[in-house]
Image (cartoon, rainbow, N blue to C red):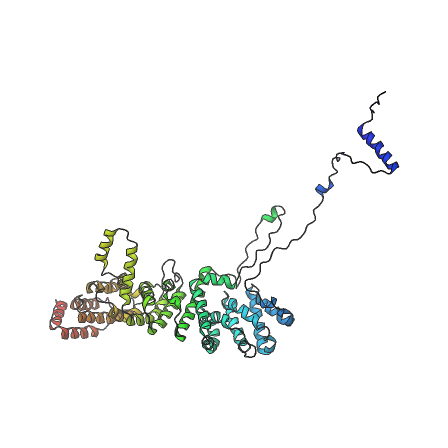
Length: 529
């Protein structure tokens, strides 16, 4: 008889099988029973959080405290002070510098082993945005010099030469005065040790002048980005409110570049004055845009940079310029002097400008040549190019700007500018002075435009005017000198020239009469008639 199939359900059969297995001690067979709903506890169980620290990149300039176990050999109190030098906050840096200066004065022996830490932080401290930090850096450096220059414990001073020299030529006068005595006392000795020291200073100053942003980024590497916090609802998406900037926070990039360029130009000037080798960067035309106010120039909206650049011109001119160096300086000087808008820069400009033009009158031809080469490069039509050569060969853009400069009353500084006109005019080649009529038209533009507001300005104008009349008469440049004197006399009668004496005009008339006996008769007739 065939075995009948049990009517028990699958669950009942499995239940009986478990009981039988429990009695016999055999292991239970695996079951394919599905888990009941709600039994997946691991799905909703809280996950165990594990902190994974971010990868910290190695610093570009490792702190000596973290290398070689130096931190373990230094007193704990001094270690705290040295750690503060690397903090970003300017107030913390100031306190560290003050404490370090006190220690260097009271107990310098404690700082002998910490000298490498100072040489590590000095470049960034010497070029720090905060003026007070730079001033304290100069004072602390002066206090530490006996330790740094000690022959028994020699310290590599070469990396400090560039920042130290720039600190001594800082844009801020108080900072420069604090750093200048130590640099004047030791700088020339350190740089004169060899070519390596001079080249290191040259390279650092050149980099600061040409690319201050890259130099700043190298001395102040950006910290690694902080890990982003985990988002927890809508509150985490809100951005923190910006805080007010405190002293020592990042200055504007343009202001930072200007501050570094002023120090760099001062350092380049020091090299020109104290070493036999010229910095190679002086051949770069971009460097001399420090004189210019044009868009994109180093001197744009930065009168401090332009003033420092004129000081460099004053140092270079008496020592000789030639070749590409002279061409680069000539074009920048003649294209910048007559359009300088700042009165303080103009006051610093006159002496370097006169020395340069007196020593290098060929600068007018060099400027015209460079200007025409630039125009020729931008001229794509051969016919226009040929016409350009014939019509523009005698014109100079720098001379045209000089005439405009005269018409505006020497750029708004008639009392300072007009006494220099004859010196400048004597350096202009005859082929650039197309005719005397255009010169005197520009000169009288200062009177017609009422640019002579004070008696001093009128006297300076009349003196320069008489000198120029005699100059044109002696060189036979035209301009009708007798007629010009007659116009000056008429301007005096109309009170267009205030509180001036007629003596210069009568003396000029006598000199003209000795040059040509017919001139004085014409002059008397012209005035009386």
